[in-house]
Image 1: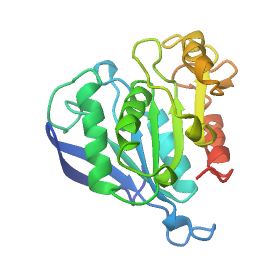
Image 2: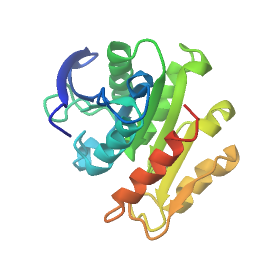
Image 3: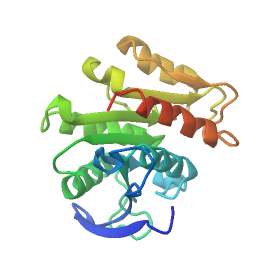
Image 4: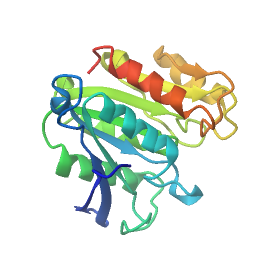
Length: 220
């Protein structure tokens, strides 16, 4: 993402996991930026070209870093130089949890994901809620949530104010109606980007602005 991006390798349940870490600049303009916590971000579907270098994932990482979070992106099993093979979300949630355990075992934790990655993030959250106090969770950012293809977990009501769900009005990969059907029983708000596609072509600056605004609202 920038000259200060750090590449790491950690051991996961299916072998080593390729990770990129971006930390806020120590001389950032906003006081206390380096102390917010760690944001772990999951990428879209591996079988359709999804990697940690996806533009939406990079946009999420930049938004978190700009608001003082250390962003952590990683390749799921079988992607890039991460070992293992695709596991339809089950093993990928284990990969997510392994990254959390290695790089954010304690302290404030934010979770984010795009498309398939949003689904995986909710599955990881299910497990993490059994391991951590609610107060340790920072923002939860779900973009292009793959509610039409996967059983995306519901978000606990206590985390709704910390959760931002963003979806493109004209998403032809995951129809907006499917995300609304997932969100409606939870009474979980969905931010709709007018004219937005699944990959937010031409609208990534707007997506970043929406995430930064959410991170600025004291939800963390």
